[in-house]
Image (cartoon, rainbow, N blue to C red):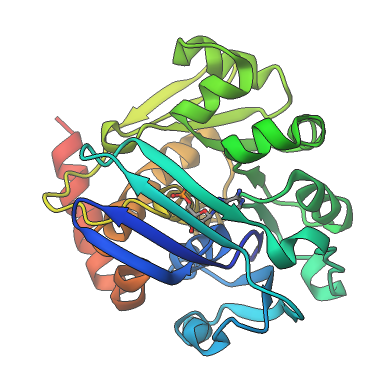
Length: 299
Ligand code: AMP
């Protein structure tokens, strides 16, 4: 099955205890598509400015990601900078510059509207809602968001949540969204906002899936040298939705397996800055790590 992904394509400046990168290639749609592309056809909807080296996305093209929905507009590309604490789990945003994102109003092509699954990666909920209105796919509608939008466009975010099947969100953002410290209670409150399934990512502590009557958890794949966690959440979502598209199922049982694929894709992504690791990754490495991970978590 095919996937339509909308999100950011960005310049990221990141500082971790492993080093730093200025204006690296990043963005929620970039990481998501890079991960999902291993599982099936993906089309990306995003906007960049004239300053963006579109050739840096050549690796996505090589993996058959449809980039015809990437608009290049006058102005500067969305940029984000952040710094990680030594534990690599806590992140502080230093600066967010919306730039060309400010007046981005995607008009989907007919062939994009029909794609099966829709993933609304981290982005202004107004834009997420506009893509939601245009999409007619019959697969899963998933989404992600972050503190910036929870604080900055809550009303539109709540409207979006009413219309989706699945929210994949960080633990700190889940707590912030529903003002609830306990994660189990937070998940229940989020389920009451609309989605039938919530996946809460907990960095090095893994991820948990909640529906009205299911709870399922996976640990994080143990990575010895975490270099840069940026994009781990989007890569997780790419592996998760990617797997559902590959197996052509959307049952809770399939989603449990998708949790494993999400964890694996996130674990690769954190091994280097920007999209470097995902660029070099091969399907064989994914299969090998998948088998290794299964052996680790199955008694
Ligand atoms: P993650 O580490 O998976 O939460 O995602 C990090 C990516 O999100 C980075 O590549 C950023 O460019 C992108 N990002 C940061 N802030 C925002 C925002 N407010 N809206 C959309 N994307 C963002």
